[in-house]
Image (cartoon, rainbow, N blue to C red; front, side, top):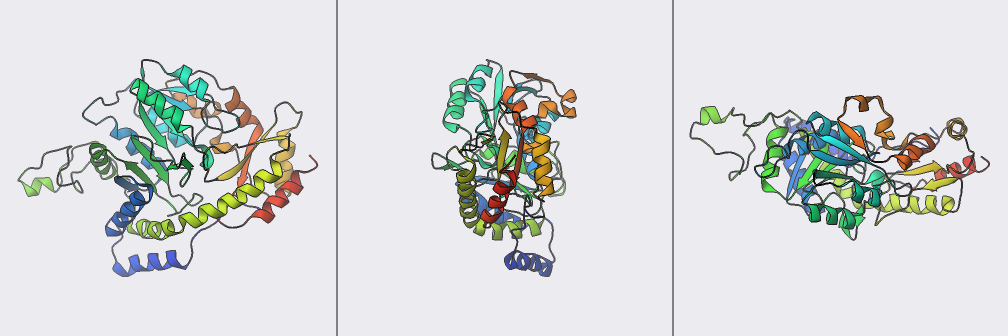
Length: 386
């Protein structure tokens, strides 16, 4: 592939981390996962981290936790506001727990919520807003947190595509009551498969730990607020308190994550240098709408939306990319409303005009944690005469 979507970030450090786990002969979740969790929470300035086996699982157990908290838990049928564009497993856990989804349109330039549309969508029945910083680009958290505070609405932050991004100097993935991250192969750091939930709420933290691990009491804090210990150690060893899952990570994932986190700042610097070059080449090209940075993006990828006012056939553009051996894909799964799965949801739509434009006119190409400015030049040359 002349210009691919993603590349490995592993080196000798990750190889040694794997060997250390093999030599120790302990593979299930243990001290290396715990070490990574603590380091991850410290990096982002949050109190409580829970690692799991994917960002999708992080969303699942984070959503589930809000149904089991003691005060004002979510209930089936509650209204949750979501953007029309995000990855599928932003939405699926919400549906799986019986929430009613209200879809709100995006801003065509940032690809995040159209804030005016979001404000209009809020009702007295809105219980939660899911904020997704698309492909590294922060949401307008000043506006979103204000809406949530004024209306006593839970803020859930899906930050799986945007590790290391900042809004007003604060990391995305730290604004919500619960916040989720992914450490999949193509993301900002990679444990190959993996995810993390961050929260500052001790009750939710303990709920999430139980949900991750069969619904057990095992691995609970000594002062856990979600159950009372009994004196019968025989029973306590296999005591189930929540209808949980098994979405635990392995020790190899924790060991690799610890090494990867040391490299994150460098990866972000390179991604931002690549992004500066991309923006400089395409910012005045009226054929394409490129993503406008909000705050400090961590630049997962480079999005391009063919200007709907121009008579340019996306099929021809994509064929040109294919012929040039430039890998590309739809923007974050496209508008979920245009996917077959939507027939299973309980939902309503306020507006989806811009999301449809992004769905039918858009695509993205890869960014990488190494210098790809020559590849961006090649992309520019490839698209020059279309």
